[in-house]
Amino acid sequence: MPVKIRLQRHGKKGKPFYWIVAADARSKRDGKYLDKLGTYNPNTNPATINLDVDSAVQWLENGAQPTDTARAILGYKGAMLKRHLKGGVKKGAFTEEQMEEKFNAWLDEKEGKVANKATGLEKEADKKAAEALEAEKAVNAARIAANTPEPVAEEPAAEEAPAEETATEEAPAVEAEAPKEEK
Image (cartoon, rainbow, N blue to C red; front, side, top):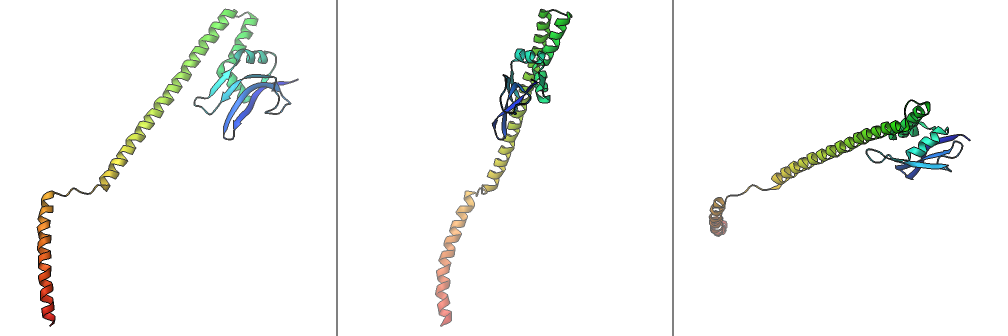
């Protein structure tokens, strides 16, 4: 029975979530599987991958063939490296302890790179948010300046009031004269 290590899709439309499984090559994509090795969530940045490396290596040693995407994920998490190192132990190139040291050193380096990428993405997002806030503040200040009427000094307002009173006093006089002219 040919065994494949592949992705089994779960999640909803537009939000994929995958299980990494060892399955018979003849079974359906989302059908029966032999062993669940981990999960893969591409919706996060960086992608979240949980993988049981030891069971993945066991399946690889027993002849399971990973698909292209599964091979990339296994390489990213170190299952392919661990399989390679186990081959070196079998040939006598180094001991089991040396293999574990090399694998753990590689894992520490990889985790450091992933952590640096995550902090870089957070800093970039914070920077973009700060720039957007400054741009919004500038737009709001311009809007407020455009909608605020110009301040009118109180002295001219006081001068205008007597002018209006004189205009109302003159108006009855004009009306009184107008009927006389018509007669």
